[in-house]
Image (tube, rainbow, N blue to C red; front, side, top):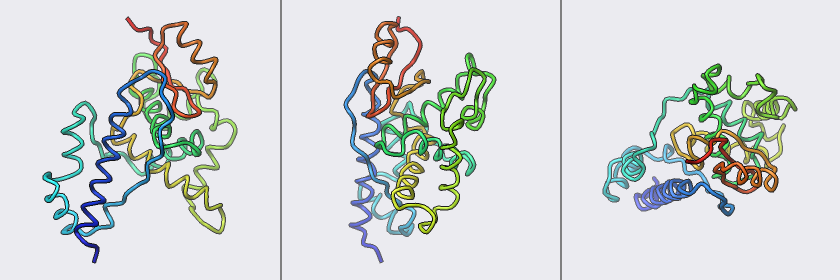
Length: 227
């Protein structure tokens, strides 16, 4: 039987991660790399233990605490398994060696494109955004085969077939995908582009007045000019 104190500590750690994620996305200019965050699986605890720990902390659910702090972000659990699979795989293909914020940012860009019906009205699902090649492949892993490999890792997770680091990386990417699909943001809604050309792209952004944010090996940016 897992102790209530252990559950309470786990919930506190989870909320600490939520607070870090929320504050990390508040400034959308150049920023330093942020550390990776581990994942906590509160579902492994019994309902009684979890409810007791949450009651001790003074709120009913982690979702309630999250919404109290970040009312502009929607806590959603209505994504499908297929969407989670594809989002996890594209995050893996684009940022498997990066930290939590960079991984979530990849998911944010995908969702930002899906939700921008003015420019991207011809795509309306995660799958359509990722496989979009109207102006050339928008996500290079689709073309170079790394997305297909990531999907195979996600489907298998077989330690006899894949390396330990690949399985651990996919697990981390899945947690980042869940966060992005649940409404967590490390870049804002108008950031619909990213690449690894940090120096040249940041110069282009500054010359055009575009907002941008550097997270580890990626630069995330908008092409909208600030007023």
